Every structure is written in structure tokens, then in C-alpha cells.
Length: 167
Image (tube, rainbow, N blue to C red; front, side):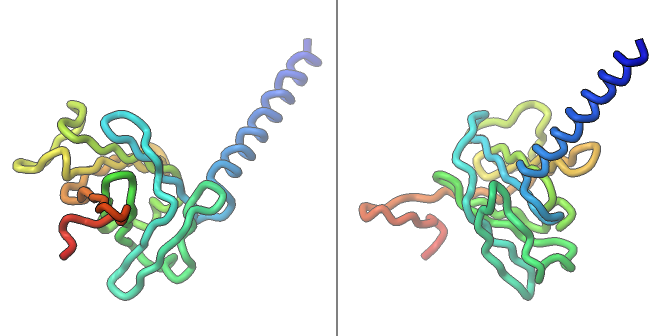
């Protein structure tokens, strides 16, 4: 009986160690690493492959490395950064994101018409211009709703993408 308990305990410990290793590989190594998943109208779309992190004094573009983005060392002392990137048909600009959230998975939800009932937008805001972000960092998870964070992009005849707000 005791041998069975030790065998089960040992198996559980191996399983936990394996899961920890898979999570570390999934997010990449290093403390300042995060992944962005994006959904449009409830369906997964292509996630960004590059992001721009911006403060009042600094701006840095970061590419996807081993499935995640790493916070550049020159920004680790900052309290918050603006994060922008492009996904199919949209430019996303999230303002004042605490750098503590740059260590885990983000789930971003974009909607063309209406968000689920658990998302409340400010009066006068439309779903098409809003973003919800769930930061999977710590317990409980943190959910953020920002308006004005989503701008449509268009493609011209030459295949160049442009923002309708750019002149």
C-alpha cells in the first residue's frame, strides 16, 4: 500500500515538473516575456509578429522570439508602456500598460458589433473601436477594457497597408 502511494506521489511530481517545463518553454525563458493571442468576433486571428513599446522618452520595436515577446532591458525600469501592433485589418494601440503585465499570456478580444454581456463599454463607445484584454499574470486574472485602441487598416492596389487616419 505504501509503495503504491509513493509511486503515485512520484508520478504526480514528475507530471508537475513536466508541466512547469512545458509552460516555461511555451512562454520562453526569462522573466520579461509575454505572448499575445487575438480573437475577432470570437474567432482566433493571426497574432502580431512584432510590437512597438513606447514611453515618453523611449520607443522600441520587438519581434516575436520563440513564441513570445521580451521586454527590452532599457524598458524594465518603466512603470508603464504603450503597446502597439498590427493584426489583420487593424492597428491596435493599448495605452499605459503596467510592465508587470509583460510577463504572461494576453488574450485580446476584438468585436465588430457587440461584446458579450460581461463587457461594459463607456457611453458613446462602439465595439468596433474597443479592445478587451485579459492578462493571465497572477491570480486572479486582470481584465482591461480600452476604447479608441482599434483603428481599421486598408490595403491599396499595390498591396501597401495604410491607416485611414494617416494623411
